[in-house]
Image (cartoon, rainbow, N blue to C red):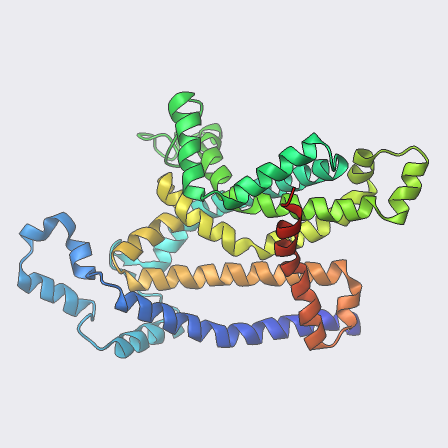
Length: 354
C-alpha cells in the first residue's frame, strides 16, 4: 500500500480540488448565461417570428421557467442534476444527455486525431531541431514553431481550406462525411478525408509548444555526460535521440501535452464551427447563440471532466517520470509538479529566440 501512497494522496488532492471548483464553475457559468443579452425564445423562434404571437412566446417562456428569478432557475437545474437529469435542450428539443451522447463520438475522434497528430509532429520536429541545433533545419523548425504559436487558429483553418479544398481540390472543406450519403454508405476512407483538415487545425495549438519543449529536453540530453561519451566513440546526434534520448524527451512531452487538453478542446469548438463538424463544439456554439442554458451547462460539465482527467494524468506522468516527487510533502510536491507544466512557457520564451 505504501508503494502507491503517493497516488492515493494525489487522487485525494485532485478530488478535493474538484469538489470546491465544480460549484464555482456551475454558478459562474449559469450566471453568465442568464446575463447574456440573448433572448432564448427569440433564438428558438428564429425565422418563424411572424407565425408566433406574443401569447405563444409567453407560453414558451413560462414552460422553460424563464420568468422565474435566476437563483430559482439554478436551484431547479441543480435539483435535476442531483437526480442524474441534465435537463432538456431548448434548441434541439431533446434531453441534454441524448444530445451529448449523439455528438461526443465526432468530437472525440477529432480531438483524438489532433492529439496524436500534434504529439507525433511536434516531438519529431523537436528531435530533428535538437539534432541539427545551430544549423538551418533548426532555424527553420524554430521559425515554424514560433509562427504557429502566434497565428490564430481560425486564420490557419481558412488558409487550409483555401489551399487544399478550393485551389487543389484534394480535401473536403466541411462536414464529417460527403453530403447525401447515409451512415451505412459512408466509408472509412471518406471519414478520414473529412477528418484531416479539422484535425490539423485543432492540432496547431499543441504542435508549437511540443517542438520547443522537445528541442530543449533533447538538447539537454545531447549536452549531458552520457551523450558526450557516446559521441566520443562515434555516435551521431540523431541516432542518439532516436535511441536512448527518446525516452528522455518523450516523457515530459507527453506530460505537457496531456496538461494542454483544455487547449485542444477549445480549439475543437472553433474548428467544428468552421468545418461544420457535427460534434459538441458545433452544438456549443449554437447553444451559446440561443442561450440554451441546459445544453451549455451539460457540455461545460463534460468538458470540465475531460480537462480534469487530462491534468490528473499529466500529474501522474510527472510523478512516474520523476520518483523524487513521490517522496516530497504535499505542498512541495505541488510546487515541483507545477514546474513541469510551467516549463512549457519558459521553453517557448527562450527557445523561440533566434
